[in-house]
Amino acid sequence: MKPSILTGGKQLYFATKRVLKIISLFFILTGLLVFDGPLAPGPALAAESTVNCDAHKGVCSQSSGDLTVSLEITPRPVKAMQDLVFKVSIEGASPAKHPHIDLGMPAMKMGPNQVWLKPTGPGTYEGTGVIVRCPSGKRTWFANVIVPESGEVKFIFNVIY
Ligand SMILES: [Cu+2]
Image (cartoon, rainbow, N blue to C red; front, side, top):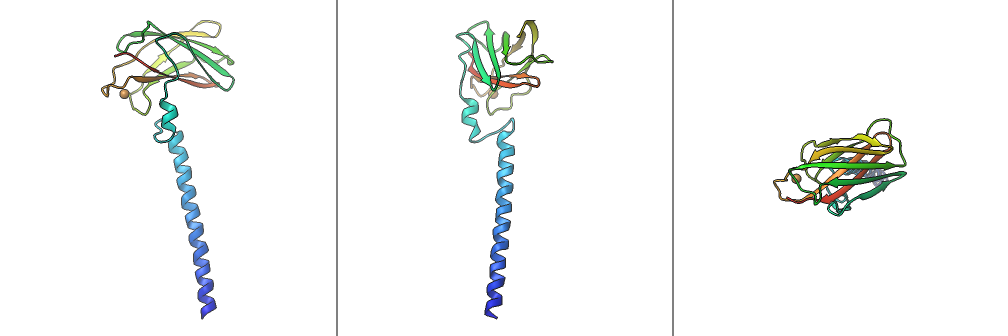
């Protein structure tokens, strides 16, 4: 009697352990999916919302892998609710399709706001867009420059309301 209970207990122990393992694996995978998503909250947030460009001063540059993107927004200082010109220059990639910019706010759903870029020379593009005034009063925006088949580079900057 005793040994069989012991064996049963052991089996139950291992079965429970396995179930726990599967459950934790599930949460890890779900967590990865959530944090890698475009609306990712949580630990990724700090890096995703840290200003990395002083758009009021002039050209900003950011790299991602082989791709280096420079962005200049005019007129300066950069204000919301007015026509802005976005000048982009790209190094390390010669995109088959034109790049574009996704404008948004870190950790906020602001609705789609895209700047379509037209070529102005070798590796240089330009387009116009408007940054709206956020009802929250927050002034930190991002410009995600998307280069088809080469990657994307995110500029995070403050605007004036
Ligand atoms: Cu907002």
